[in-house]
Length: 355
Image (cartoon, rainbow, N blue to C red; front, side, top):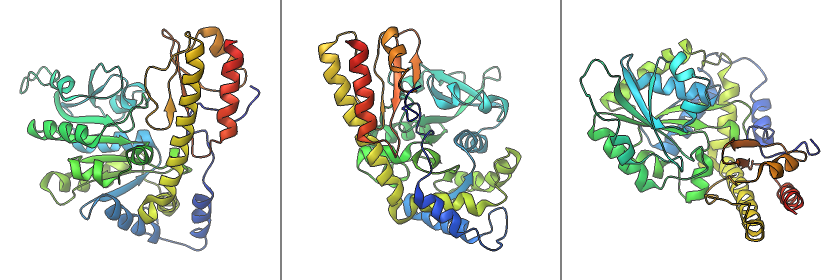
């Protein structure tokens, strides 16, 4: 591998300097463990600023943990979650929702990674029949695993459908900041305001070291109160309770204070690099029909389809995932620290490989 920088995942990027500085600043002295510290108290204030006055947040270590804890709080042992086949909770969490959470996942196909009301409806049957796990939660990812983006009205439609059928809507927001930057909207406008019940808030991919959180949007409603009361216990039994929580909260505070200033700046940079990469690939595809890009780059990921020999040549220079072995689709993910030099280097490698 010639280039140590790559496009595999935004998890490959380093930690943002302001995150490191905040962690260093809270290091001196002693504070109460397990969340009774000043940084976690500040995080609760930030959660309310971002998601509304009734929202509460529960810091955890990682994204899989956030999803498993969130879904466990809403799903009983005989119940199930509806999601798309490409959902992270289905494809990329090592079976943790099933093995650790005891959750049944009812999946539906989706070529663009987005769940529609019509697709979710296909899993609403045999309600009350003991032979089938009962759907209780709809889980979506924003942005999706395919790099696509839900518009607020699409999320609202899913929330309305979920609530009309006695279900909750969970949003996996591992890249929530990238979605907000792409939409030009605040977190609240496409979560709280459109009926989302639970959010897994991602900090690691946007510049954190190891920091995510579960957000209960309305902790004062009867159902939300149940979720919020269950969360501390589920977080502990799911091995997601940080003892020195102030260091997890410090990361989240550095990213999401002041209207998520640092997170949004990082997301805008990552998204802009992906847009430039997408435009460059389109230009190359116009001259080389064996290269194509089925989906527009809506946030910080580009998913071109390449011949196998081209992919192998580029991988001599840059590290990235082959997304679909059958079609030859690959994923190029831009991070908060991706540079124009990185993008031009990858495009140069592509041009060389197809020439």
